[in-house]
Length: 238
Ligand code: ADP
Ligand code: ADP
Image (tube, rainbow, N blue to C red; front, side, top):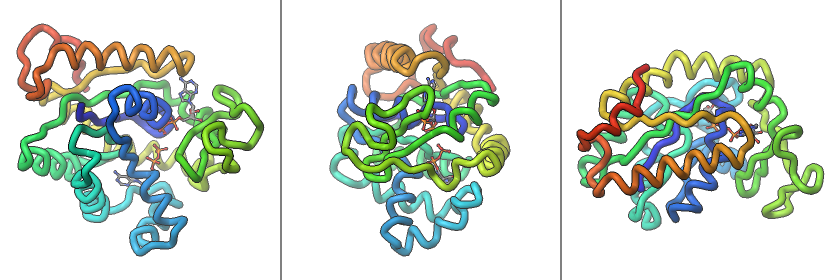
């Protein structure tokens, strides 16, 4: 399974990505997590990305594209992958499409996570993140078992520097200006599927996995874009 998760910040991509990656046995490739890891370790890549991230701007395409190609070339991505937070611009989507076509392993599906914008801000400002393994929590909707501590690895949870109301409003502007058009890009290719990302987290997971099971049953490894049957009507145009 080769898939992309699309949706504004706070849509629940990271939360669901963990479950999908586990269910399908593919690596979760979250560009935001990779950048944060590099910032923490003070690498050259981290140094290049940091100021963009702190402001809520997108990191320049050439930096992100090179990083993702490297990651997709690693052994564990051979059996499939889940991209969370990439692509975010048309040039990134085109570069990904060209790269995957050259290796004859096209995308199977792009899931668009839908959530009302008012909900996004509420989710983001109360998000808490594990700096160690990337798990996400919410003070109200998904609290950790022990306050301030990651359930999975015991690390101390942090509030991301860019998870303030001011920065998230700018990230939403970036989403509308640069990322939203990818909905049409993938709809045109017959790859876009919608997930309503509201209600309890477990319900969203069930909905998502059911959709992916259907897709896995439908396609033969050549990609949804090649199917011509009536499942196309599930996709909605932007
Ligand atoms: P994204 O990766 O799209 O930015 P996250 O998965 O990090 O989104 O979720 C953003 C915040 O919303 C987190 O604090 C998470 O715990 C919370 N969250 C995720 N899914 C839901 C949901 N279905 N209902 C309520 N809160 C949610
Ligand atoms: P969220 O899903 O909460 O918006 P991410 O963790 O995916 O946040 O990304 C955090 C920041 O990392 C973004 O605001 C941006 O600065 C940078 N970033 C992550 N992925 C990309 C990308 N594909 N292109 C450009 N910048 C990116």
